[in-house]
Image (cartoon, rainbow, N blue to C red):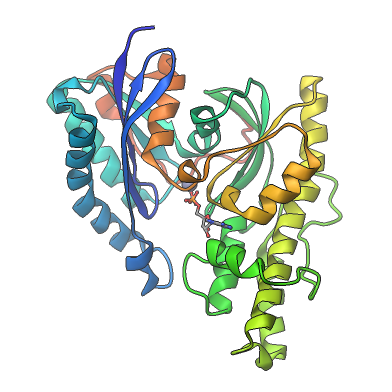
Length: 348
Ligand code: KG4
Ligand code: ZN
């Protein structure tokens, strides 16, 4: 395989992230820089697409200069531009796509349009050796789904959330508890000093015999709990216990539904598949502990590649070179906020 330099651009939500990757038989990360808008967006209590877009526009070029300098390469040495085009917030996606098209025009180089969800799961290959097919569990702020990953370009969704994502359950719960945004890591940390059996929170779609998830009920039940327990305010131990119990319910749903997903995948592929977990919530220590205890062959994307990042974007282009769009055809690529027509389940 010949060597090429891939620039990865990720701007689908509130992280501006660029990566330069050297692609040959293996992927080698040359430089990787991110700017998280978390602190800036805290005052808004979450992501405001228009504001996130402005920050992307502000940060992309300085980040590009940094990765070029760190990798010690020139712009002209870039062979391929990989950019997240779906799914995500339309404004933020367009900022990254505009940069990709500008560079494509300037350098006359092709673009690889990246499906953000596939990139999250396929990031596993940056640190682990996992063969296809595998059962993927993607848990992030915007998505929660089980899929069979047959190749870098083909994956089949076999279960997904019917409402909120697991990360949203953490973030919205954290907001109700006054913990700030995003709350996943904060709840994870507080839960370490709490007792997960102190309180009981509901597990969505507990009785449905499928791999679907639901997280809308749990935050309503947390709201009711907070109203009933004014003594929670200022009570550190009780807050730790609530966080541990709330986190347990979120994770319990994933563990329970992983059994159905595992079974469904076995019926479809006639084999027991290894489990790969990716997306921001894959950083959760309790989720890792529970799934590792349950599945002998479970692999977790490395924390630095779990939350939105340019490395996973460049990596998907490295893995899926067949689907690169040549220049100038690539200038017609568009961004899409949604990925699927839910009726359409196999994606190639
Ligand atoms: O993958 P990601 O960066 O964004 C999306 O594509 O949505 O994931 C962000 C999500 C947030 O909801 C955040 O609270 C959650 O990942 N998260 C965590 C942890 N670290 C990040 N959730 C639970 N435990 C963590 N340690
Ligand atoms: Zn993501």
